[in-house]
Length: 262
Image (cartoon, rainbow, N blue to C red):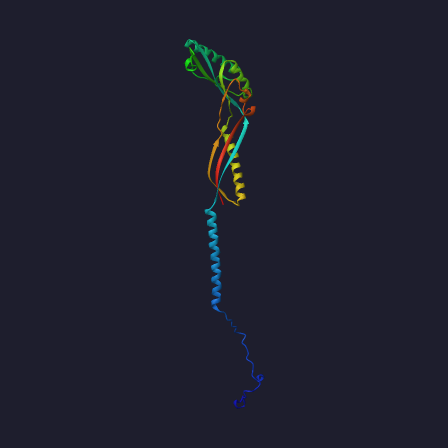
C-alpha cells in the first residue's frame, strides 16, 4: 500500500482484522488470592484438630466415678447341723457333783447315738467344778458342768432332738449351725451373682448418663457370717430348723465395685 494514499479517515472495514493464535492461551490469576485460600483452609483444619484433641482430653481426664454394691444369694438344703449344749450336776460334795454330771452326760450321749449320730461326731469337754456360791449368792455346795456337742445329718429332725435333750437334763442347747459340703463352690456362685448384680447397676447408671465405656478401679467383698443363738426351753423349737423352718443353708455375698465411666 502506498503511504501517500493512506487516509486516517479510511473506513474501519478496510483495516484487516487481527487474527488470534490458538496455540497460545493466557490466563491471568492473582497469586496472592490462592495462597490466602490455602492458609484459611489449613487454619480451619488446625482449629478443628485442636478442638478435637481438647474434647478427647476432657473426656479422658473427667470420667464419672460410680460405686455400686451387688448382692448375690445362694440357698440350698442344709446337709448337716451342729448343736452344742451343757449339762450340770450339783451336790454338797465335790466328788458326788462330778459323778452326777458324768451320769447325765453319759445318758445324753446314749440319746445322741440312738438318734443316729455316730460316736465320732459327739464331743465332750472336761468337767468344770465351781462353788455354787459363785453362781448363786448364798448357795452352798458345788456345781459341776460338762459342755457337749454333736453333728447330725438328720436336719429335719433337729427340733425333736433339741426337745429330747432338754427333757433328758440338758441345761442350754444352742441354736443349730447349719452347714453344707463344698462351701467354696456356693461362695463362688454367690460371688458371681453379686458381681452380675453390680454390673447391671453400673450399666443402668452408665446408660442414663451416656457413658458407654467403664473400667473397674476397686472391688471388695463381704460374706455373710454363720451365727448361732441360744435356744431356751420356752422358745419355739421349730425356729432352730433353719430359716423359717425350711432347713436351708444360705450364703450371701456383697460385692462393692467402683467404676470409672466415659
